[in-house]
Length: 48
Image (cartoon, rainbow, N blue to C red; front, side, top):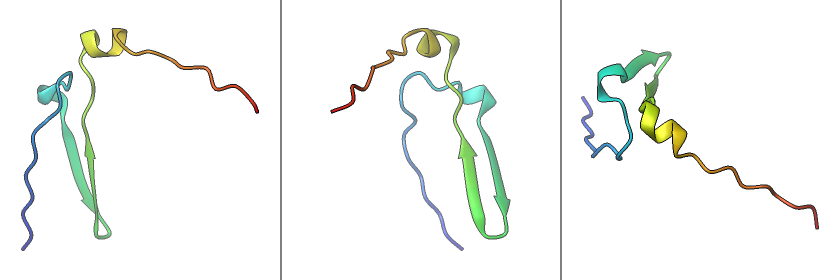
């Protein structure tokens, strides 16, 4: 068996974390809290 642990970053809604294991691939979804979503900053990328 394999075990891994890590600290959650700030702004993660721990009550809505979802994990699935399909065909040998572990997928973990860490949704942001409403406050963290509001704090997002979009950056425009300029063409060279």
